[in-house]
Image 1 (cartoon, rainbow, N blue to C red):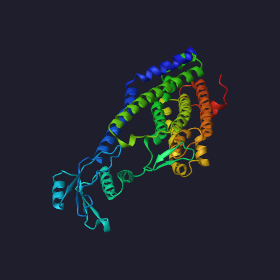
Image 2: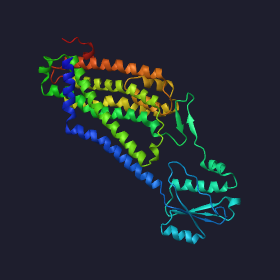
Image 3: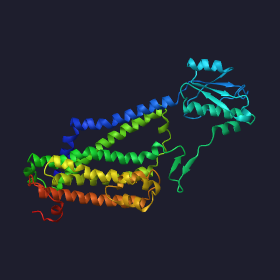
Image 4: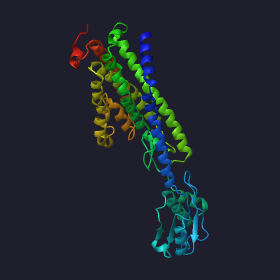
Length: 402
């Protein structure tokens, strides 16, 4: 076991301190920072707090009642004008972002005209709507008028109470399982170079003879697998910390999309339970490809064949998963190796995946991961001294290594 952990630490250390790893580690935080910045800019544009003017020919807003305060909505002041010319002059001077004209026969026609140079923000539109509504209810008791103007927040909830979704669409919390699945796939793509290089490079530089006399194939493959998985987990931990910091900053900036994320922790846990053994399985199969290949270039060219089922199959069948998230196809892809991770992540957006399916899928992924490590060690044992000769998978599975 000492050699096993020495190999794991060596594989981890020699890759983590490379400049390429550090650049890859920083790439995702930079992308997150860019997205938060873009979100802040878009939110700022959408929530323009400049005043709104109005010309009231109907007398509806004489001595008006202020619009109700809505949480997480920027307050906007409303400026009355006696004539449209005065309102237009203020608009051209950019004193206001737009103005409304309430027709004299409003109570019969409900006609309100909006004049603007640039379309006002949704925040401003909703604020004026609330302003009009509460003043239409001014003959009611104040508490009733305030309650009616505040409206109703409708939330859709699953029958078992485990899933709530606002009518406006999925929140960041609901999309979190999908983000976790995509994060593991990104880790797999970034780790593929290390995985292929772990064995193929040692065959190319002819250090295999020394390794063959020092460690067993299982120690060699198992140690390298653990070391490279450690590299991936290091990236994941750093990205998670950066994401938490980004969410905190976004919350302080009042970016609406991250407010009240409504995280379904059972879906997050279900995704992680499947993601970890699925990631180990992919790593083991990539090591087996590296051990069977004749060169590093050949090994890297085969990476796409392994990544393809992880992404393309669930993506192409996404329409069926949306239509029947608990159908036979969805269940089959959840249980199958390689497609389980993204399928489970995708299903968690639309339904609650039963725990028996999560447990069954995790068990299948774990058994396949153990089989993948065994396959990689067998390929390593057969091919460690066969330089320039390609191993066939039938030979790896059937031959009895000496």
